[in-house]
Image (cartoon, rainbow, N blue to C red):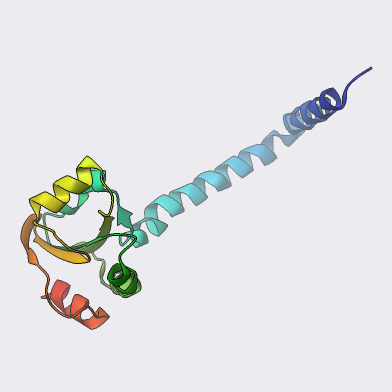
Length: 158
C-alpha cells in the first residue's frame, strides 16, 4: 500500500513525464525562449533604470567607477530620522537625474562592519545623512546645500 507522500511523488513524476513528451517539446522551447527574452529586457532596460538603487558598503567602489561624470552618494543610517526624511526626496531626484555622466547612489553605513567604518573614516563622516560628491571618480566635496529635490538636481547638474 502506497503512502500519501508516495502518491504525491508519483503524480509529480507523471506531470513531468507529460511535459517532456515529444509532442510538448515545441511548447517547452517556446516557453524557454520567452523567458530568455524577458530576462534580456530585465537586465538590459529595467536594471539600468534602477541606478539609484542602494549599494552595499562592500560595493562602494562602484561610485569610483564613474570616470566620466558626477556622482552623488547619500551615506545614511536606517535608524536616523533625518535620513528617513531625506530618502524619498533622494529617490525622486535620482530617478530623474541618473544618466551616463550623472549618478546618484545610497549606502547604509549605520552598522559596525569594517566596510562601513572604512567609508566613515576615509571621508570624515561623523553624522547622518551625509552627501558626498565625486567628479570623474575622485572625491570632490561634501554637499552642504539644500536637502530638496531641486537642490540635489542643481548640484549634480552643475
